[in-house]
Amino acid sequence: MSRIRTVEVNIHGRVQGVGYRAWTKSQAERLGLSGHVRNRADGTVAAIFSGETEAVAVMLDACRKGPPGARVTDIVEREGTRPEAGFQILRD
Image (tube, one colour):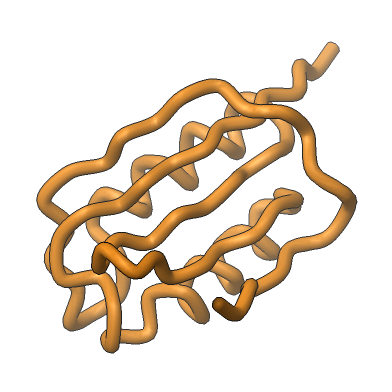
């Protein structure tokens, strides 16, 4: 029996202007996750991932590296509430 996990993350480092949001959307959809990703004014990227526990773990591991050009220095995560279905890039 699978278990659903939802996490909210803030990703720090060189993560804006390097295609991080589009890469995140692609990875999340490939893993069957719901949620969203957006740039924050403080230069971080914020995301919510919701899906099977194993898929969320794979996504978090992938986010520690990010797309080519990104340099992730830290990821702060906390348990979150389940979002609507699908994965979106939110605009500020």
